[in-house]
Length: 586
Image (cartoon, rainbow, N blue to C red; front, side, top):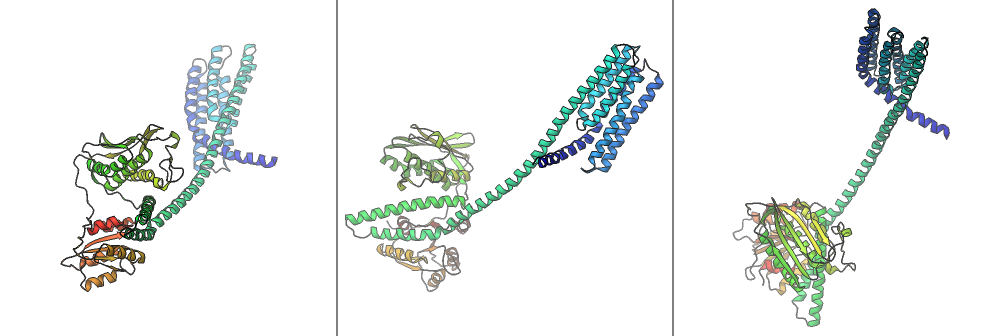
């Protein structure tokens, strides 16, 4: 175990040593400037006291060592040695530093004259300077410093010991002590540099490991997103099949309502319809979430009148608020925003519904306040409030803070989640501020517009007069067919029901002229409901029927195709009240 640990340590040291040698050669030229300055100092200070010939010879040798340094650097660059060769290049550098130490150390013999103490002081100042300045550069290769400083101050010690007086030998010993201090500094700095390189390598390894982990996490995230998207797309696509029995159940319950029942029977029918309504509401909430997750909701921006929007909210919610003794107030000032009318109304409806559930007394305020180029829409309530710890949870799916018993009459806990996602599609974000026992305030912004343009309206579904003609229904579900037949028979509406597009076209070819064609989108055979409507239009009948497409699909492509072809689109389950309005039955 000890041997293995030692081997690991040596293996760890090798890249650090390699990187240090590479850095040494990268900054090798930087020390030339310092050498040039001290060289000039030596020449200037020695010139008045030493033979000029000696000074010039030393200067020539010194310049030759600088040329040698440059040659060494160029050879290194041409060679571009690999890791295995770098220790040898470290030896080359150490040899060069030894030569430079000899050249600099010789100045104590050439320029320092003991009989003229100032020359000794000037020479030692130069040597101390060049030796001290060499520490940072040689920290990448401490043996180079050992050779350079060791030789310089070995020369100084020998020279000082040869002087007879006591002071000079002491100066020589002090100079050696200074050299020892420089060596210690160099070792400390070398360890710091090595630690820095080691940390750099560890960081690289860590980054590499994190990159791998990030890639794995990204793959896992994509897999989770794909699984979630597949789930949402499945739910969106399956909504047609899920809505069919609910559609039929609603039709049958509407037929029950028209029967002559006693009080007990009417109570049972009312309970059935209440539960169907609750089921439809919960089902719609789930499908709204699935549409948002599947990306099936694409906002269609237009100018929205806030006054008109608030009028609709008031018409719908004011009776509910009055039943509970809650004062509903609305404040707007004729503003218009650029938004999706349906999504914006859905968001505010969800926020107001949430306020009604949470408010037992007091008031609810729906307000529009200008904020520069944006309009802030706010819903205030004086309800129970939200604890600070729960503020981040209320937008999660299926979270209901005040419904631990999961009473379905209080919803499914999807309203705020749907509102938050819908506002995100509109380019905003919902903020919430609340205090327990004091109420809550939900708000978000939409862009203001100065000159509203007329919003693009969906194709209108014209009602068909009761005595104005027959109705042709195209739907292949037997339960829906039976439910429609039962209900329309009780309403005394002339109708015909067929199960596919080909049969419907045959009826037109045979001379049938219904006043209304109401077709399901998904039909057996090669034609769907949209294809059928296109074929009927192509017949160019003198008195064409009103044509409406009914579907439970949430495919945005279908929605866009229906809008492009100006085909009115209704979603299942189609309630009895909607069918009455469509047929013009009071």
